[in-house]
Image (tube, rainbow, N blue to C red; front, side, top):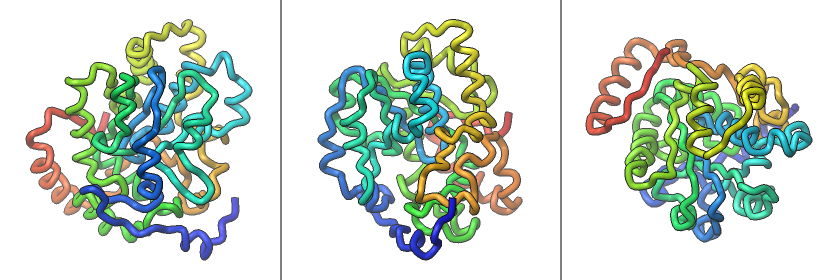
Length: 298
């Protein structure tokens, strides 16, 4: 896919504070319609901080629900249309409109919003929510490369600057620390929230799919489960044009692929010793009151 760099650069937004969270206009311009979105009781919301396994979880859920009944969709409709991104609003697409028009039941809908921004109808309708969290070090590396190639994201600048902005919570969708902890704290009071870890999914995809099925009340056959587990392996998804975002026109795959490595521990190829020490010290302060435990290698 060829991208006109000058035209694409003009799409890059500024970042600003919105209700205490760093955001860009692509995710605030449709705010009222998003907040008034009417969820249905069988809707499933997939929530993550950006680049924490959103597409992976979306694809697993899509295959669990529709892999047998809508096989033609798997090869003809991109995952970002099958699982619309509720938060987005551009001149070409509105996540709310896409979600409203979804013909499926259940509707699978994704969001990167921190928990306090989620439309209240999801809670009122007692919708099931699947949250995926990824360790901060790999998450920031993945987000950096994503921002380099995605022209509806702010200009990322250099790695060192980007890392410090991540630590300060000055990236789109705000602080990773607030995000993962905000959703984690929702769990005790909301039984229909399934909290998953990217590292667990990498370690044993089948086991995590079993847990997901238990949460959702699904009982796929052994054969179906094997087909899903194989289909959602990183290398297979990376080759799958309906899952790898290669049809998305605001991304330049010559800079970086949307699906880059899908590994645990790639942060070691980016962090200097000094950056790692500074990050660890800051992380300890920010996470000292949290019961969340992350693995940065497996």
